[in-house]
Image 1 (spheres, rainbow, N blue to C red):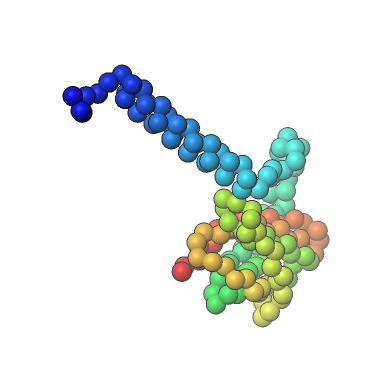
Image 2 (cartoon, rainbow, N blue to C red):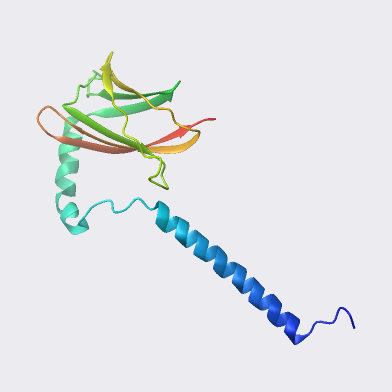
Length: 151
């Protein structure tokens, strides 16, 4: 019979199916490792020892941070408890994709009318901002912000 299912055909189908599954897994693992940005902290135990103290100090600042992206410009608005603009001692921002470090960039922000603004040409999709600033007294302010750019 022409359409007969033999042991040899079943073996071929099984080997081909598992071969495809293994090949896809190898490709996905390679892509995951290639785009992994690395460690968040060098030593998680040491970072955990200062986490609560840094959080309390940051909360004591009473700052509120809003962000916006429009017409290729990224805007960060720091406000104090009274709603007044806050000028920070220094500001470092990394803008990147949540899943890979290849498109990470660090735009230069400048003080403009009570906000920090920077030119940032961002493609549509989900982005994150990893922000670190220092108050005049040296208190560290860190925040991760999610940003969605519409196409």
